[in-house]
Amino acid sequence: MLRLLPALALLGLASCGSSAPKSAAPAPIPDPPPAADPGWNQFRGPTGMGLVLDGAEYPREWDAASGKNILWKIPLDAFGYSSPIVRGGRVYLTGEKDGLGLLMAFDAATGAPLWNLPGAEKPDGEGDPRDGMSSGLCASTPATDGSRVFALFSTADLLCADPDGRVLWKKNLGAPENAYGLASSPVLWKDKLLIQFDRGNRMDGGSELLALRPETGEVLWSAPRPVPNSWSTPLVVSWEGRDLLVTCANPYVIAYDPAGGRELWRAKGLAGDVAPMPVFAAGLVFAATADSRLFAIRAGGSGDVTASGIAWTGDAGMPSMASPLTDGTRLLLCEAGELTCLEVRTGKLLWTAAAGEAYWASPVLAGRAVYLPEKSGRTFVFELGDAWRPGSEGNIGEALAASPAFHAGRIYLRGEQRLYCVGRAK
Image 1 (cartoon, helix red, strand yellow):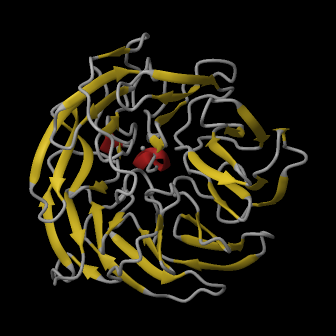
Image 2: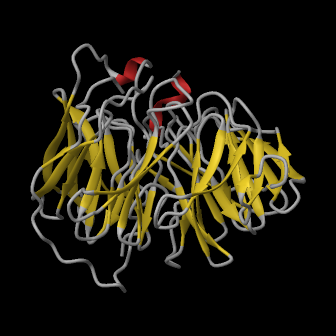
C-alpha cells in the first residue's frame, strides 16, 4: 500500500461524497491571453511529462542546512502529497489541516502565504495519511489556466477559485470508491478540464473519464471506462494530426479523443495498482507499472491494438509510483533506488545505476539534466545520456514525496514540513 501514497504524485482516500454532481453558481472571469506564460501549470508541467521548456538556467546543487541556493523556505502546517504548481507569481498547493482539505496560494517571489480555501472535509474514521493506509485528502496536484485554479480532493470534491482566492464554483463528482483515495490530478487541454475518475473494484462500471467546462464545472462529456480504481493522471499528446488523451489503469492503456471522449484504441497488459503516468516520444506511448511490464504502444492505431500495436515490451526497473521520463531518444525508469535507461525506439538497455533508496516523486528534465527527488530529501541531478555519469545533488533535509515545479530559473519543492524555493540569488 505504501508505494501508492504520494500521488500518487504521483502522481495524487476514502469512500465519501454525493452520488449526484452539485455545483455553485460561477463568477465570470476572462480567459488568459493566448501568449501567456503557462508556468508549471499542472502535475508534471505544461507537457504533462516533466519537461522544462523555458530555457532558463536552474541550480544543480542546493542545501537547506547551509542555505546554499535556498531563496526562501516556509513552514507548512497543512499536510499532503500533492505537488506545487506555479503561474502568475503564485505557487498553489493543497494540504490537509484540522480535518479540512485546503487550496493554498503563496507569493512565488517571497513564499508569503496569500490565502487558503477549504475544499473538502475529512470523512469520519479516516486515519492520518502518514500512517501508511491512505493518501489523505490532498494527493491530487492542482491545475491552473491563469484565470482559475482547480483542486481535486480525495472525496471527489472539486474546487475552482481565482488567483485572488475567490471561489468561482464547487462540484462533487460522486462517491470516490477508491482503496487508497483519489490521486489522479486534473489536466487542462484547450477549453476543457479533464479528469480520470476511476473507482470501485469492477471492470464493468463506475469508472469514467470526464471533460468539464473550466468556467462553470459543467460536464461537457463523459466516457465510461472498463477499469477499477487507479491512481494515474492522464496525458494529452498529438501525433500525425490527431490528439490523444492517454490513460492507464488495470488492465488497459486507452487513448481517447479529448474533444469528444470517443475511444480511439486500447491495449491490454497493465496489472495491479496503477499509479505512474504514461509518456510519449517518437510516435510511441510508454506505460509501465511494477505489477506488470513496460509497453511501447504505437500512437496511430485504432481499436484493440494489443496484438498489433505494441512495438516492444520490457521488464527491467518497473516503477510503482514515479512516472517515466524521456528526452525523445532515451527512456528513464526509476524504482527503489535503481535507475534504468532504455533506447526509445527499440527498448535496448543502455544502462542501469543505483542512487538513493526510494522515489515517490517523478523526475524532471531541464535541458539535458535530470532532477530526480529521493524520499530522504535529496534530489539527484545528472545528465541523461547513453551512459550513466553521476552528477550533483541538492538536499532539503526532510522527507520529499511531491514532484518539483520548475519556472523561470527557480525550483519549488514541497517537503513534509516546508515549502522551498531553490534558485540563484541575484
